[in-house]
Amino acid sequence: MLKNAPKFYEIAKRVVEITEDTIIVAHNAQFDFRILQTEFRRLGFPFDRKTLCTVELSKKLIPDLPSYSLGKLVRSLGIPVTDRHRASGDALATVKLFKLLLNKDSEKTIIQEALNKKPKKQLEPKLVDIVSDLPSSTGVYYIRNVNNTIIYIGKSKNIRKRVNQHFTGTSPKAKKIQMQVTSVTHEATGSELVALLKESEEIKRNKPILNRALRRSSFTHALYSFIDNEGYMNLKLDKADGRKKSITTFTNRQSGKDFLFNTVDKFNLCQKLAGIYKTKASCFNYDVKKCNGACISKETPESYNKRVSELIDKYSYRNQNMVIVDRGREIDERSAILIKDGVFQGLGFYNLNYQINNIEILESIITPMENNRDNQHIIQSYLRRNKRLKVIQLNKNN
Image 1 (tube, rainbow, N blue to C red):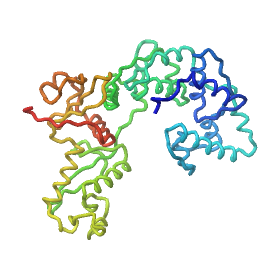
Image 2: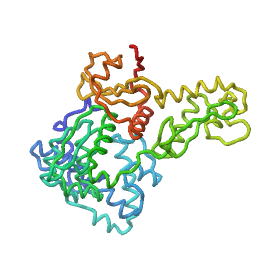
Image 3: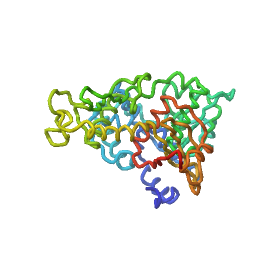
Image 4: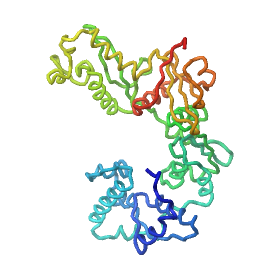
């Protein structure tokens, strides 16, 4: 999207003209305004404008909402949004939200109070220096205190932006980070999947105090299979149980239900046997000719179970030998996540001209990692979300 976009210095004059004698309204104004100030400072120009923050206004005028992120906020208020996470879509959503807030503030007292010459939060020089040294790439970051002890570990597709959010945030965790931080180190991964796996492992190994305080299970539900009295393979979405072998896991019940509905259509399965349509007769899909009749024994168990097995093979990687190929840290590099006999072995990086089709060769470049439930969930969730991800099936004798 930015390939042919102009450089900031080319449009800086126009930004000055547009914003002259105006108030900049933004969702989390302190972040957006500081980005503008930083760019103008690089050009040697003092950019100073009044600002209004729709996050602050929303918290005062519409208290006790579960989230004040732009997407969730406008959704809860019934404000239609198109083209989310794009400049025009988010700007229009903010305009609609601001108009609603103006109407709610009939006396305009809160608007006057919220009108700032500069945003409330200004980064201390120490924090500015820390952020400026960080890359805008994907990886894991380690926030350290004066004793060089790691107090928080996180991952992000943009390390600099994420750490900056910690430094400008107002949550209890953000305030603790701002009080204690003296340095931030990082490790580039290129791949978000590698970053997720490394973050999980590093948190378990280092047990940072601010991660422990907020740590919770990353998944609550799982998909299981069982064979009924007629010989058909059934699916069941249930609470995650470490004693049982699951097909795949989910962060909540709703994401599991969404997955089930999609896979029933994709693999032409029976709603009744997938546990999403309770009936003693045929399922709804059979009535509309989308089910082959396993619900009323019209399709043989062998024929039906073949498709269920395909689903299980695709999403559980049970008994499989495969490597997941993703982005690397450099242009000519790729990351590799190795699964052997259905067990996560670890990950590594290789050069583009290095052929990876042999398990023995792969194992020589792989850094071993634990095959725990968290890592299984991370890999399975990533595979579900990234349908175009390159997955190479391996044979032991390759």
